[in-house]
Length: 296
Image (cartoon, rainbow, N blue to C red; front, side, top):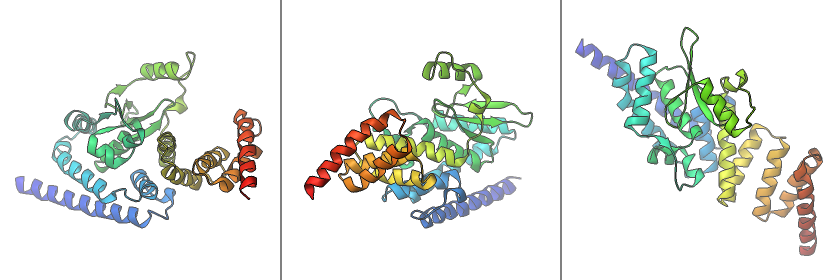
């Protein structure tokens, strides 16, 4: 029996290794030219990160996760019940490995890049959630992302239809009462908890959520070159989004690429004339046009 278990364990790890190197190849091949719809959530995030940051270490991230899976395998596989397997993974992730919310003084972008999060064990709901989801999927655990109005959360359904909500910041169980309090504290004191707030999110929606947060972080950190890369990726997802085109225009303006910035800002003003920000942008456009005229 011991030999059989050892052979099975080695076989499982061989399969993991083959899958890991396939993932690396898939990500690297698509780092500059990829279709989000053809990739898993993890592959999408790594491909996007490589596109944004040329130094993003895909191989390191995959190898780090491989070592975590090796460490997890015996503990998880010793459990027969799916519920207890998930409980074991939560304990490993949050108590033993000490992944947690990034508190204190941090650059927000550092809490979103997966390589930094794996190094420091500190992240945001979305970055920690993506890592936890990846590990859960490797053990066939039924865990899905939910884009709740306040943050990303995780959900798991059992065969009886019961739902278990998990906070990816600390692994704690969430219930509808807690989620309602979150809504009323962050959105409105009279906010209602609707069923669609708890629906499974598509991978593309999670990617967009992370990229939105990353773009804002990079803009606040004045890292406009990387912010521009993020904006271009978001426009790959939705090429005609006037708000994303506006943000790209503002980034171009910070980079003093006024000709390109003008085209984007004028596009937004034209397509969203009722938006209050349009009046402010008209003043900025007028100022930029004058500077461009003087320079020529």
